[in-house]
Length: 362
Ligand SMILES: [Zn+2]
Image (cartoon, rainbow, N blue to C red; front, side):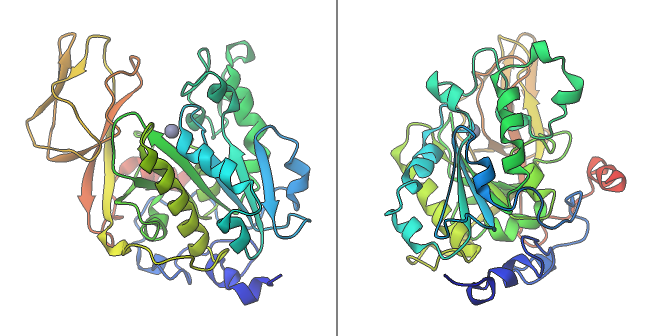
């Protein structure tokens, strides 16, 4: 088995075991990112357990690796955090097979395969009927702010997964979407260059701002420690191509980390577009609907009426790209997000006051 130095993993992750050095040696050029980016709150080394054996009893958590001791680094591959999203689950199930080409290529460390929300998968839903969106619970604030009788299945699941997620040195979280969409990555600003190497059509950032989704996603506890964390929307739920994309993204993620050698020639990452999320729009009332069908990454023009109903018109205040449109959601849930296209190297500049204050108190 290769040591850390022989594999180059140490060089890519920084000098300390499990630590990611922002602005350091990452070949994608983290050092070129501007200082004004919304910064992870805390730089730190490895935390959590020293062997994944300690956590392998948790339902849907399958640590696998070449060393039976299941040592660090721990790289999480997450599928079906939303129960009805099959592509990530296909990867989790596929990589449980020791003969899978990705497993056979693994050089070191432990892949922590995680079926995010088994209970929701059993009922073929995004989340359980009386539960909540699991991917909005990973700041764990509900444990202090919400009475226990109001918790659903997902609240208990988030706490069950907490020691696993907080132990990870890197994570890839695989999703699919209700509407057709090009594959795209979701990252905190410093990981735009890493995500640009995963072969997705687009890399998006800015989701972690308080006015958008905040730092309560599964990736947040990992990227808050400045360690690689990428969520990928692989395509539409039922599109078989989403499964293909999920496997390709997983392979490239592990290549970038140095955990497997390059297995095949991939598309040129230079074709990846970078989009900064600017606004989250929640569904305002039950009657509200889009004025036309939207697919992910459709462009809208300033002044265009995007939706109406219940006495409300939604008018674009500028030219935008539409992300994750879905007018079938419940009132108060995510109707769509609006983003602006950026050049990859200047796309991380930010004048967002909320991200600054966030940094000040970190
Ligand atoms: Zn999802």
